Image (cartoon, rainbow, N blue to C red; front, side, top):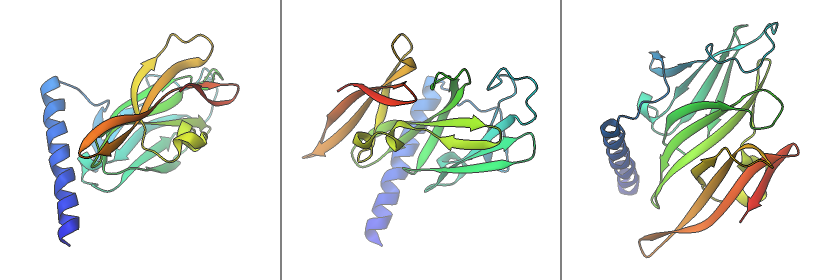
Length: 205
């Protein structure tokens, strides 16, 4: 019981500190309102594709995370114009949604959804990124760690996003993993990752 309380206290202190930093820096989460304690981002201003005759469209994205009282669970809720709601629970918790963005990651002419999150463990703090593809009212996660075996055994933080790489579908992401020894945190691996030929590729190690 004492160990659980210590871990809980550690995360509470971590998140209180990051929330103070965010508030002082004036960072605004990409949310346009709230509903039943969930954060909500409106999608209607930016269509996911150019098919104006599509009968099913994504209406909004809501989520439960640390900010909404879910300390050990982060879950996205994708709502569609036909009334369908798709839930996607994310790994690594507790975490906080920081930003929702859109970009054509796969090069198919349609925007994918990019979710940026804050996460901290006993080693350090991370910016986690999850990628989702929308087809009709189906939501598929296409994050690189689900495809690239080398990414599967570590927590990876996105430290840079480059929109100038011509050989790959933009953007290209610089990702780092970390190791903690003798109370000192150092970079374990750094990878440059991009999407090409229908899949994620490690461009540079």
